Image (cartoon, rainbow, N blue to C red; front, side):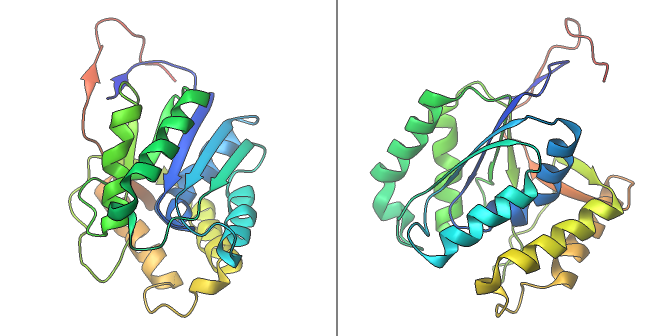
Length: 220
């Protein structure tokens, strides 16, 4: 649920099914938020990749994507592609995350993502975080599941370029994938930028929107 109004952003949660999901879907947004708000608390949870080189990549990458932030990262060992079978473990991890944080914003996969791991995690988030702003990020893939989005975070050209640079620098294990390249990441950011009348942007799905326009001051 989103309450549109004036509220300082002090704490966020970012979740991903796999190492690199958060950075691909919302890396530019993380860079922009953390630079604008030194000391921002970022609690990150990733369901798979624990104990492998992927966990090491994720640690280094999120440290770079969250400059000046108070970053807390947990990487679990659920098998890639098997999240529905491990629903109980994933749900327990999300609930444990909720017990230790009450964020102003949650960055999570979209509930209509074609990948079963992404979609399953997205469906778990509102079961634990029932009254929070949740933005569902998108990940380009062969499934062709990109669609119309509801919310946009404009990115400066510098932030968009840095996002691509950090993705290439920190996730060496993914460079062989045919969709994992500069053109794909900047191309999608350019399209989303066109849609919100800026150069580059990241786009997000929104499930619920609660407006308090008569109560809150909507200033910066």
